[in-house]
Amino acid sequence: MRKANGATATHRRRRYQREGPSMKTNILLPLAASVLALAAAIPAYAEYPEKPVSFVVPFPPGDLEDVLTRMIAEDFQEKYGVAAAVVNKPSEGGPFPGAVDVAVAPADGYTIGSFVMDVPIIGPEVGIPALADSPFEPLGIFLTYPFVIATDADAPYSTMEELADYARENEVSLGHFGSFLVPTQATFAASKIMGFEWGTDASSAALDCNTLASGDFEVINTTIQQIFPCLDQVKILASITQEPLEVVDNVPMLGEVTPRLNLNLWNGLFVHKDTPQDVRDKIIAVAQETMASERAQQLAADTGALIYWMDAEQSVRQIQGDTATLNDINTLIEAH
Image 1: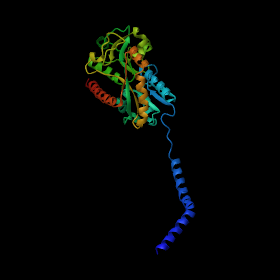
Image 2: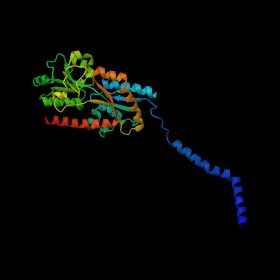
Image 3: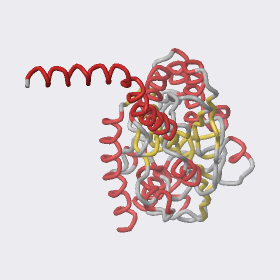
Image 4: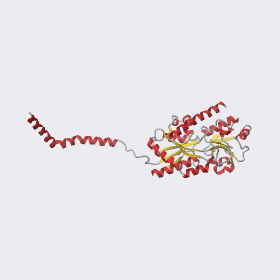
């Protein structure tokens, strides 16, 4: 019996050696074809970035956030070898229409927002569907820049107190970047506290030296960068900052003039909240190096702006704190 079994086993081994390759080919070929078909069905993702990147600045060219974002774009292009550019999208609706373009773009890191604090804080409240669900998350905050309340050098008032006295008897027009914006809300709150009303107010995409010289507005709420070329032709009534301005002397902070208005206005980089972390990390790496660069720090020295890099976690905490302050301002306005 063992001999017969041994003979049978020997016979099977010889048969397998004779027919085995053909049998294995018949089994493996369909399997290999299936694997190849599956591989073809899975898209091959190139490493980010592989195509042009846009940094959306929802304001006109020339201001601090625009200048610094251009620096980031230049450094991004140099580091990764792809085109990177700033896209300016100013609007009389403030930064929100430009922010929508970032919100509706694919969450792939190819459309990056360079936003003032109003976008993440007020954006969800302005009634624009694309912004309603807080679509953004910060990569980091990189700029604290001085908003100011300014008027022409020939205006019959030189301080906020004198402006208040004058405005109680005369209509004074105010120009701003948008009624929903934080610095504008702070300016409205200051007038309520000081007991006067603006005669008229309107938003404008550009609030600079020509705005005051042409008489379009008597007082403007703008950034120091916009009026830097004509500082000798204007009077700055107050700065909306938490620290005194270094580029001009004896300008009080709005928080010194009116209580509860101690604000810190900033700009940061934002992406859609679904953007992958590895993509975020590459953008952050460039922006962080840019802010530490000599040319960025020279801009800070020349303009009085604070230029730095605040990481994403710290930025989230900053936004939460600023939201509480703005809620206090809104309560203040409504109470008056």
